[in-house]
Image (cartoon, rainbow, N blue to C red; front, top):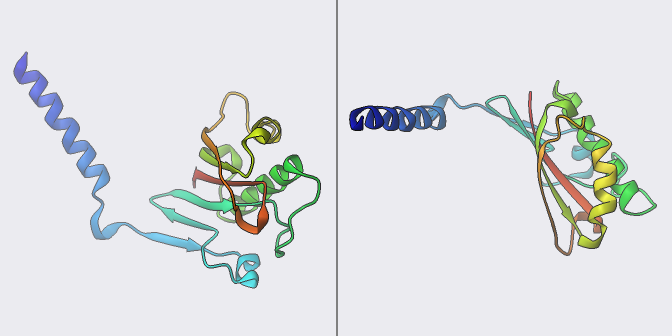
Length: 152
């Protein structure tokens, strides 16, 4: 019994190590949209590593502009999700392939309103895991910023 446990334990460690340590064969691709180039933001819209797309935090700005949509948290959330969808589509993915999101709010009391709009984007049976927190000073004075991870 002890030998079986040791064999199982050592094979788990080897699997984690071999999956984690991809060495020099790991390719990282950087995606910068024309809108981001135009605005000269100091980051990529997304990076792709091993078929996983890491979308940078997006806010509810009008594409190609530093101007946020008007109307408050719901409208900003709606536009933020559209901006994320546009990036994913450009990379051959979709909102259906999102598996993790992080939502940053300027005011945690608006969490419910943000969540109302957010949930409209995802299938009830395939909601990504999510974290949400509040802080001050989001980019462009936004009420919400959301980053997502998706498979390609």
